[in-house]
Amino acid sequence: MNPTRQDGLALVVDDAEGNRILAEAFLKRLGWTVKTFADATSALNFCQQTLPEAMLVDVRMPGMSGDDLVRRLREQFPLAQLRLVGYTAHAMADEIAGFRQAGFDDVLIKPALLADLRRVLPGPGQAPAA
Image 1 (spheres, helix red, strand yellow):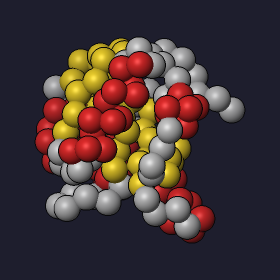
Image 2: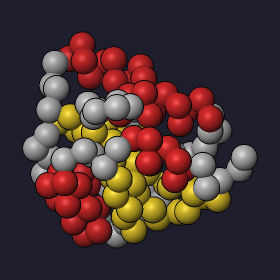
Image 3: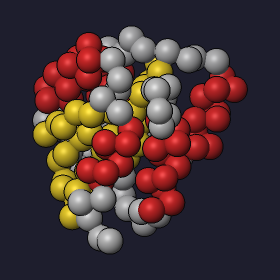
């Protein structure tokens, strides 16, 4: 199965509605088209048809966790240019290292500011700050 790539699309995957609303507002300010999901399974199912340019994923969610979602995406679409950013309240260095091992490109610590999001997902087609 080859999903259609949608440049400029960012998915927000978070079980907390308030987090989805805030992240969506920030991403739209940065020029992204945004689609939100309350769980990882729904996001994974969506990606079978449409692959976004980027995803902001809550690491800890009921059901399938964010790191499990990222592992599956990396396995199913190993060549995809997909920017995956973890979004978590877990800030311990060893946990962040584990998230990167799972396949996240970067990790934001909640609560994140617009400037934090701009650093990791500056806008469609733009490379993150080094």
